[in-house]
Image 1 (cartoon, rainbow, N blue to C red):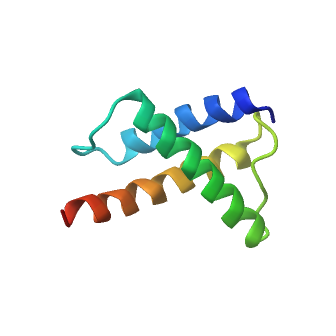
Image 2: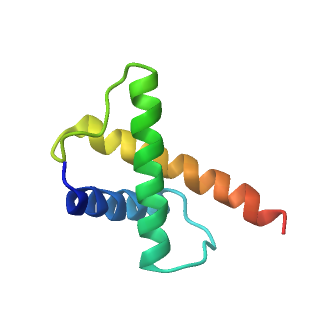
Image 3: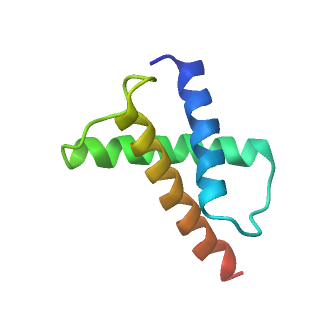
Length: 85
């Protein structure tokens, strides 16, 4: 998957993760993009580590599930970190 495809995957995965976990998250589309890209990286890394797959193909359902799952994990962690301030 190319760089622009990975950014698009991250933006959409971050938006889906924010829709699943609504709340008072700060930031606009750029923060959503960062959450999605970091989540896709984390999901792909954990998926390959556990033997579940990786984020190689843009149109694979496994890629999307790993990216969204990673984005949800990043959102949860970000909520825990930002709540303590």
